[in-house]
Length: 223
Image (tube, rainbow, N blue to C red; front, top):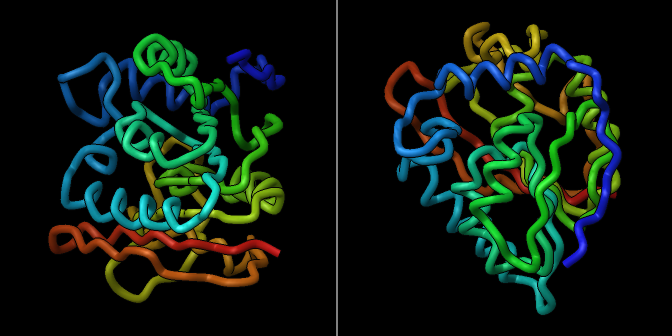
């Protein structure tokens, strides 16, 4: 299948450099592969309910839909969803990671793209998956991404949140940890993002060890 060319910025944005460093220095752990996207992509307590819920959603359509995965990481999640979609557009900001994925995951309905999702145009699809990505980004970058999410009919969003009451969307510096360290978390439908959706469904709420918060996945149907 001919790969669709999507224009990518060549500017070394701070977020790209931060994410490059995560993989270069193995900051998310793991030693089974040159690239490891952290426990959020490998811990079965987190991964299994996620795969089950998203697979159930994807299988609910009479005709398979197209999916765009923003922040595909090491593709441990994406490879398990791939059989249930018409086409899978997998996006990440780290060039070496994308090249590794291209060499190791090959299917006719799969394409990989190295893009900065806050800056670059995004692939078209029926549904977009954004799994534990926005929690790493500044409010400025999240706002830029939210505007682009309006092109998708469905948005499956996963975020790491405090397990108690919190003030949403405290700003952070991109690539310097997540909002959890500020006792905050990303809620797209709250200010300053105010993401407008037609329907919101809570798919999964996974409780982690005491003090480590919860991982929550929503399904949004967009106007």
